[in-house]
Image 1 (cartoon, rainbow, N blue to C red):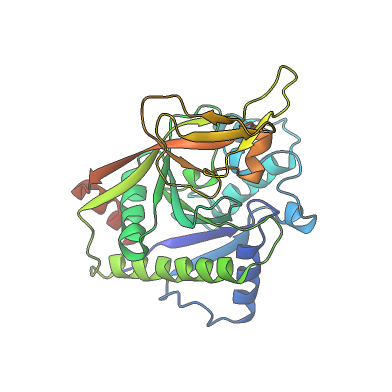
Image 2: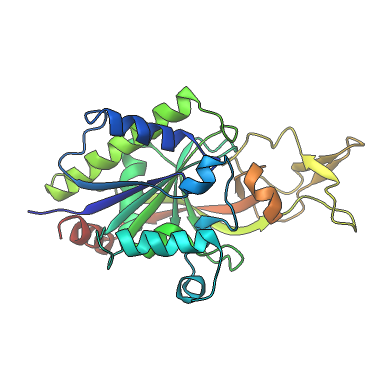
Length: 304
């Protein structure tokens, strides 16, 4: 039986340094992580941004994989050129094609270790369910947001994002590095188990489905007038209900959550999202029964 070719990406954002540091150590110590014989390509997503300690140079690389940008022949944006380069090298029809992609990120939010999936591709759902069953990772399903699209892993037949935090931008943190290594090792173990027919899939998948993102309160000039309420700061995944405090102004008056539905917020006060006018994203927690078609889809990619 053959197996997948796995693309591992670190440094898609140039100010997220923990996964790139781990990749560099891995290149020095070949036995650092057991790959179980799985063919692997390890790349830095945005090495130019990483070299100058910036999230990006011209445009967020993880929003550059939109068809209109990839197909345009006139775009001078460096991240768009890099997106095309990555696809030409490692895309499904590239020079060194891969059929699975895992994109490692860190966040300033108190997300812990989590999996992000985009849309409802069967193979992604099955792979996320395995991570959840193995490591207990929460799963954030990002879909239906037209303002945020063009994500890297969507261009590969199967792809997930791993988010690990909290950690400030540009700070190497032993806990973040350890968690990244743990998830990376689990990734190979899970793929190997599926390839060898030994993996037992869970009965269900718990997802936090993206509903919408909300901004900070702002004045007519667009300036932020309130910050994240101390009861909310660091409380990613914890449900909020009508009447709960969301923000607080300089007068110490809380801004209450006034919607009737309950939501679970994620990426609370993520530093990189302030420019996007996102204070947090609201999700609905849902439990989905695992479908046999999901398992078959993942197995067909892993065992192809």
